[in-house]
Length: 249
Length: 328
Ligand SMILES: Nc1ncnc2c1ncn2[C@@H]1O[C@H](COP(=O)(O)OP(=O)(O)OP(=O)(O)O)[C@@H](O)[C@H]1O
Ligand SMILES: [Mg+2]
Image 1 (cartoon, rainbow over the protein chains, first blue to last red):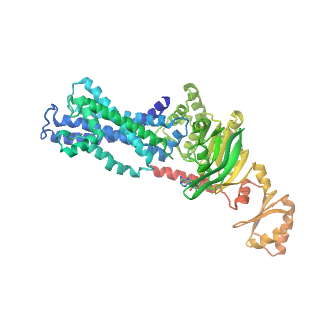
Image 2: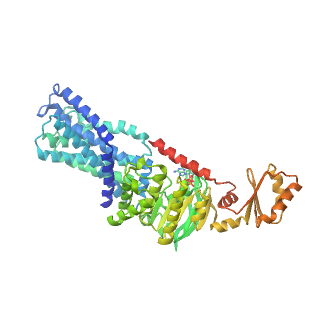
C-alpha cells in the first residue's frame, strides 16, 4: 500500500506542476462545450432532458476529458522508459503489480480532477444541477472511466518502445472510442447497427453513467452501466498488469 | 562466501553476442572493477546481475540469490547507479530521494536523516528543493549516486559512476565509496573508463573486451604481467626496430602498435643504452623514447592491443548531454 501511495504521490505532484498541460487539456473540452453546446442548443430538441442539448453533452464532454487525461497518464510510462526513470522503479524490491496500481490510481486521480474542473466550469457557465447525490454517482463513474483507461494506457505503453505510435493510437483507438460513445448524440436515435457498435464501446457506459448521475436519466439501465463498467475496469487492470509485468527496458 | 557468482553468463541481441560466456566470483566486501572499451558488454553484464535483463544462458547469483529465480531478494540486496540518467526531472532533488526511500521502505525518520546526510555529502543540500530539470549534468550525477547509496545495499553496482564529474567531486566520491566499503563492508562492482579510478578503488579488476574477460587480477599483478617497467618508443621504422629489439634477451614483452612500440622490461634504466645502441647499429631513427612504471593503460594495451583513452570517456559525456538536450 505504501508503494502504491508513493507512485500515486509522484503522479499527482507531476500533474499539479504541469500547469500548462493542465490548462491546455481544458481547451478542447471547453471549445466543444461552447461551440456544440451553445451552437446547437437552440436547434436540437432533446425530449425528456430539461437542460437541453447543452445539458445532454456536458456528461459527454466530462467523459472525454477523463478519457483523454487517463489514457495520456497511462501512456506516460513510455516517457519514464525513455527518460530512464522507469528503471529506478523497476529495480526496486517492489512488485510490478504495486507499481502498476499506483500508476493507475494516480492517473485516475488526475483524470477525475480534470473532469471535475470541467464540471465546475460548466456549472459556472449557467448549467443547473440540483441533485447532490447525483454528483456522487457521477464521480463514481468518472473514477471507473479514469481507472480503466489509465490501465488501458499502461497496457499500450507496455508494448510500445517510443512515442511514435502515440498518434496512431490517438487516431485509431481513442478518437473512435470517444466518437462512438454517445457523448454527443443520443444512442436511441441511431440506426440499429451503429447502436450495437456503440454498445460495444465501454465509454458509452461511462457517459450514460455520468448522465444518469447529473441529469437523472439515462438510456441504459444504471445497474447494467455499473456492471459493465466495473467489469471493464477489472479487465483492463488485469490486462494492464499482465503486460506491465513483462515490460522490458 | 561470495557476494556475486557468475557462471558462463551469455547475453545475445539477435545474432550479436554482447556478453560471451562470462565467469567470475566476487567476494563479500570486495571492490571489483569492470574495465573495458565502449561496447565491451559492461552495462549488459550489470543489467543482468541487477535483474533488469534476462541472460540468454548461464547463471548468476547476487548475495546468494539466483538472478532469475529469486529476483525479489536480489533486488532487496542491491543498489545501482545506472549509466544513463534515471531521475524524474519534474521532481526536486529531495523528492527524488524521498521517492527512492519510500520504494525501499525506509522508515520516515531514518529516511529524512539519510536524505539530509547524503545531499550534504554530494553538496546538493542547498539546492534540494530545486527541480532536477534545472540541474547541470554533474549535479544530476551526484544526485543519482546519493540516491543509490541511500538504502545501504549489501551489493552496490556503479555503472561509470563518476562520468562527467569534475576532478574535485570525483575525488570526493572516491573517498566516500572507499569509506562505504571499509566501514559498512558493502561489496561494490563498478565499471569505468578511468584507469585512475579502477586503480585507486578496486581490489580486483577484470578487463573485458567484446564480451569476454581477457584478464582478471589485482591492479598490482596486472601491471606485473607486463614484466616490469614500460618503455615506449616512437620511430618511423617500427617494424625494423621491432625485430631488432626482439632479440634482446632481457626484454620480457614487446608489442607493435599503430604509432609506437612498447617494451616490458625489468629495471628499464639499465637497458636504455643497450636498446638505443641496437637501434643505431641498425640505422633506425628514434623520434621519442620514454620510460615509465606500468599503468593500467599499459595493461589494457597489452591485453587488447588497443588504447582506452580518457577522451573516449569524455566524448561519451558529451553524448550523454546531447541526448538529454535532444529529448526536450
Ligand atoms: N538492447 C540492445 N539491443 C541490441 N544491442 C544491444 C542492446 N544493448 C546493448 N547492445 C549491444 O551490446 C554491446 C555491449 O553493450 P554495453 O552497453 O553492455 O557496453 P558497455 O561495455 O557498457 O559500453 P560503454 O562503455 O559504452 O557503456 C554493444 O555492442 C551494444 O551495441
Ligand atoms: Mg555501459
